[in-house]
Image (tube, rainbow, N blue to C red; front, top):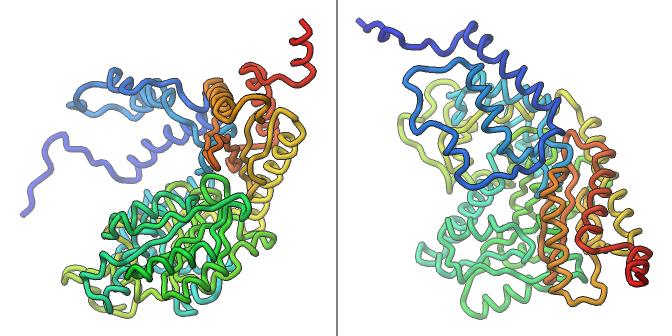
Length: 502
């Protein structure tokens, strides 16, 4: 006979508790989004400051949710970088939406753990449906659909997808080379590829000396060329090494470069390499037919990934990974202890997503992506993407029209890279001036941008994509850039001439 709960033990979940606890949170978030423009986009916080405001130990007795929310407002919100601010133009967007939040509430509220079909059949099956929907929306080849012999999974990030596909490529190669052959395997990426590929290669045991960072240049739009990959591969083969894995990127982090998928795919096929297409940010734009040429040649890829949590109105975290041959992936990642085997319906014929990822446990991510797709539809999502692209076109025109500035790389999707032009100073002085400009923009609290270095040039990145960002925010950002440029000494020509005369 079971014992009764201890006196005072909470009953934390139930209809009344959920309603009473969640209603104040909804009110809080409503106020946060109503007032979000009043907060500095990036806080003026010092490391360790929060520890001085919070107790050294948790409370002995619980606090009401209202008291917790008061502390959130007083201590947490002032120290946040407000990623959902309409004036956030840094990194790439991690935009949310009302539908994404609703989907996340359903995911958290249902709180199922769909690591296998048996552990939650509807969650597993909805995920397989949603990744097929996304595959079709993005115009990917049928070979990535479940009906075409491929399939998809929802990971938390591109990093997970990269490690998983690297492991699959490694194990495929070692079946013929033997385990000791791992020291001969080589991974290829460009100097514009995300650092996660280098990290992932290290995690799966590729020697650091066997990671090739291939230079790009302005002549190819900083895209990775097939010839440069061929040259690197041939040199490695001549040294007794084995080409393993090649990354092609659609929309690199720094400048939004697009690698030629078809050309790189042909190289990968020629040398027996795994080709992964990383479309983490720009993959969302593929729902628009005018961007489909970026993915030409995807039928030559072994895997493709994109992040709905970046530009697709799906709250963190959510990454789509498709593979053309799921068996290669699952053979590298599967574990089959008796306590996880499916008994009864389903058996071995169903999808167990634990075998498509590194971790065992996983959230019901498909719910929030499904809600976003249902709520906004394909047409609404295309309009969302095109709106930000038009904003970026306008910003690029403004930069080009101001003689003090230059567009360093042509606009890519909704990303513009720019800087103050060199006048009479050398590049080092120009870089210092642009650093001062970026600091002035960000410390104003009125916008937040980040930088990159390309061809030894320090450039400022203006990445549009916030769910709340409107054209007026982009205009205000340009006004801010001009204002701060004047403050750091970059005056329009007429002002500079007047100053010299005086």
